[in-house]
Image (cartoon, rainbow, N blue to C red; front, side, top):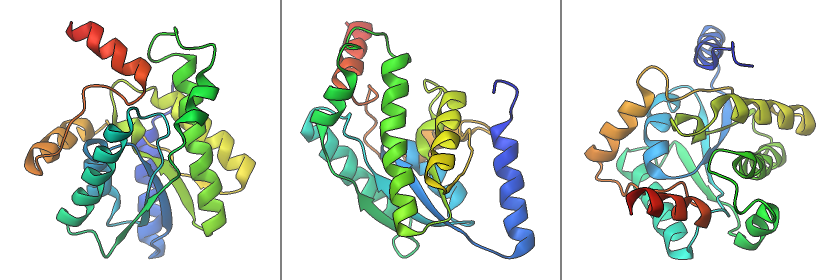
Length: 209
């Protein structure tokens, strides 16, 4: 897992599509506007994208809603409204807390986060299958704080389970994260200081305290 170059794999997939003259459909799980900015800019020329905002981990509800509205605004202001379809999942924070039970004290980036990745990616794989889309993927690999290897491992496991292709990625590569920071400034996006859940918020407050 450690030796794979997910960015190279993604480039090869895009090259193959261009040779074949096809534009597959993609369900893109999006966590927030800043992370989605570069990913949408990068993928929109090559995929018909359904942008799926499914994040039951985000607390409080006001934060969840603010991130959702920023993502919708970004899609419109990037001129992608006709090309990218926005789709919101069900906001069920109680399901996130049930999943995290017993893991509340674990540090950020550990098993609780891996389960959270799987929760969101599972819903994405399931929906991609239901909608008959070609691929599913997530913007989460753009973050330097997220484990891209683990995300891709989970994505590929779910792809086999649901019978829908997973688009491997490591969007932070090729200055992807840097570009997302530039686009966030350009569109004056709200940039949160924590991943989303109440546990990451507490860790952020400790760091800044």
